[in-house]
Image (cartoon, rainbow, N blue to C red; front, top):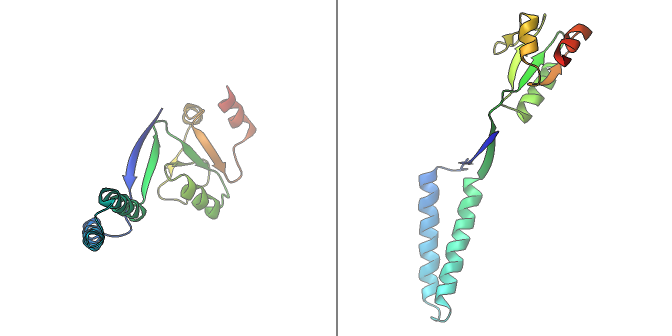
Length: 142
């Protein structure tokens, strides 16, 4: 099940951004009022829509999905640090687990028993390094 929500990542301080956009809107409206009164309502509406569009460009809205299920990245012996960093850029919510002799990362949690590995069945997204032995892979298939 995923839960979505709208999030903003503004390029500039939100207060200053709104202040500048409001001032520019007022300036354009005042300059527009000096023209003829014909189609005034539609011109004002166009200005409001244009300023809203500019605001959205600077606010950078994003619709994010948050997975309620856990996803794991397992590090095994001789894994590539570069590959792990690339995977974490793409999937920042992955939880890092280590198996065997691969405990270089401080944020990684070790898998100590076969039962812990079996409990992760279906939640493992990536395995980097030399991988798991055939017996461990069979354990995940059961």
